[in-house]
Amino acid sequence: MQKIIKKKLSPAYTAFGVDTLQIDSVVGFDCYIKRFNGYVIIIEQGTLITEKLYEKIKGNEYLYVHESELNKHKAYCKAMQTLDAEKSAIEKAIENVIALPELIGQYKSSEEKLHLIYQNACDLGYLFFNAKVYAKLPLKALNTFIDVTLKLIVTSENLLPKFLKMMPDKYHIEYHSVNVSILSMFLGHKIGFLYSDLQKLAMAGVLHDIGKLQIERSILEKDGTLAPEEFEVIQEHAAM
Image 1 (spheres, rainbow, N blue to C red):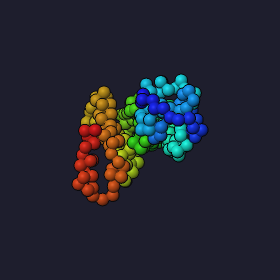
Image 2: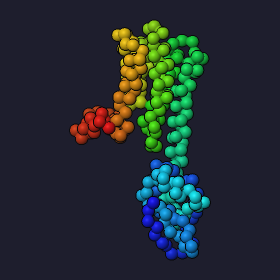
Image 3: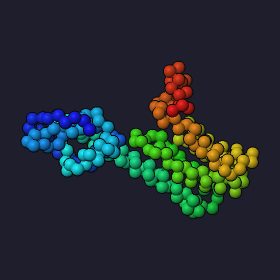
Image 4: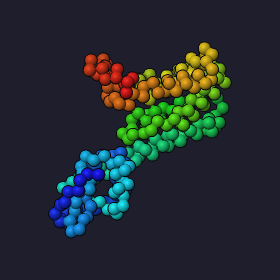
């Protein structure tokens, strides 16, 4: 909690609900509360809204922003709406992957089942790698993806050539991680890995590039040769 700074009474303040502030976000404007016959700052510009801070301020029905920072407040609210939409999309993608054991029952051919698994896993990967909001690792969804894929691979024949045709020609990090995981399952099964080892191998495959979450997409998907400094950034992903 920042030190309270007293301000002179002024009508130039606009009220907003405390619930418009989101935990783990940084406010780009000063937030005020009414105190006696004036307004005082309760959250300074640049403050991270932690769970502890939110608990302290949620007892206030309203906070206030000065008219000089209304545009900053509007920009913050718009950004939070975008993050809410991303959260909802990620949650839906996680639900779709977790539902795969039931969904694949609607298809007869192994190729159709694998295509459904592949598309849902890549959809989740795309949202996870591109989200501006911090997202916890969806372990339940990843374990479901691995389990349904392994069961399909070990019970099907001649599925690898069909999977290779599904893979896109251009590199995308979300497809690449899923590709590595599925290809490792095919390879591990071929050389006789135990099922428990196949599960570990598949998880290592899908997470092997997790450090690239910290790297800009413009570098990851740059056409042509990387500049020396860009290549150094790429090399750092394994330690992130």
